[in-house]
Length: 298
Image 1 (cartoon, rainbow, N blue to C red):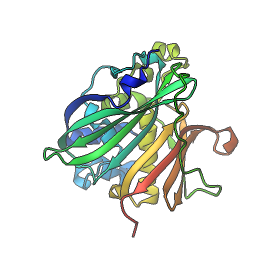
Image 2: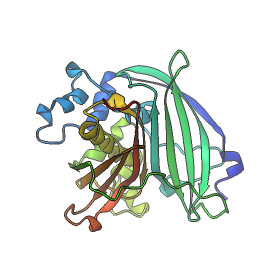
Image 3: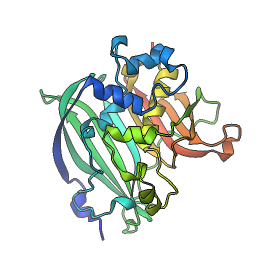
Image 4: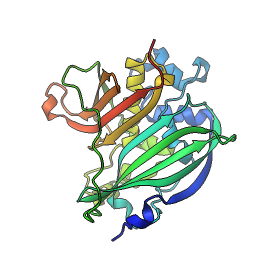
């Protein structure tokens, strides 16, 4: 069996030192769609993501990409006990937990391990967890990457837990559209994710897709930013964590419909593509999104 659970579970991964600059933050925000709407140039909320003279703020999801910003090769899958091909792997979900607002520049070391291995029957689900520490060895943030490996389940392991917060049965508190630019995936890959699935038509076809797809983490960032700007008054510091699953494919050029609900436990969110006038025909791209707040909004 390509995945040896006894070797993989709990295995420590090589630590990674990294740094980021103000320019990296600006590129990340542009790559995740800031400035894509006609009036963004005149919107103070958007300038706060794209102009250092406006009091630059950092979207918390930047923590997910910061360690790999300088990567220029496809992502490595050299995980203990996991002998799998890149074509069989999908990024199935992401979580980020921030201790405080992210600085616009800095350096850190990421220490990671394989925290969980689950069996869906048809696939294996591998969860990597890493915490970034500053020069004083204080934790800055924690990330959890959920990796879906097709065809590697069925060994009788435990199934992954289901998300705890369902979508409420009422009208959303946020209902927004975002048009994914045709070159969105080409831009986003400059933030360190060089998986050819997002740019190479031949690779996409080998993976069973008609053409390259948008990175799930780009949809993830768009959803978080819309929530921050619509429901949190632009306060990135109000975000304590954001978790979501990537359950469907989003293609560059499509329109995302982003919906979110305020709940006592946090903000529940989802993103879909399709005709917003016929919700039943929409296809989910991101589901089970939950934003927890670092403090109550005043």
